[in-house]
Each structure stands twice: as C-alpha cells, then as structure tokens.
Length: 76
Image (cartoon, rainbow, N blue to C red; front, side, top):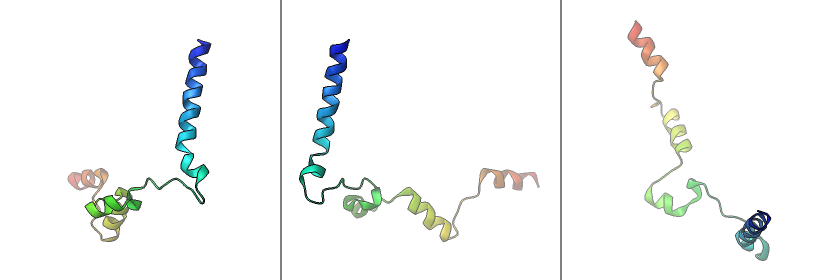
C-alpha cells in the first residue's frame, strides 16, 4: 500500500515538473490562455465564447423569453 502511494506521488511530481518546464526555464514564461476568444485557430473558424455571444444577443435585443414569461402569456 505504501509503495503504491509513493509511486503515485512520484508520478504526480514528475507530471507537475514537466508541465511547468516552460514557466520555469523561459524568461517571462507563462501558461498560455485556455479561453476560446484567445485562440487564433478558433477565431479563424468563427467559433466564439458563449458568454460573449450571449452578451451580443442581449445588447442587440434578440434575447430569448424565459420559460416563466412564456407560461405567463399562455395563462392570459
């Protein structure tokens, strides 16, 4: 049981070290952004962040009615 725990901790430590190589050894190294709007490939395909798309729809006045609003109109 102890051997498995030590091996697991060693694997996790090696994984963390390999993930941080770019940050540690590069001047001004940092992790790249994982957001969709920061990805050039996604922008080329026309894929955007759902939060930004929702914001655009709301500012353009094309927001959807909520289920509560629809039920209220049916009762009248």
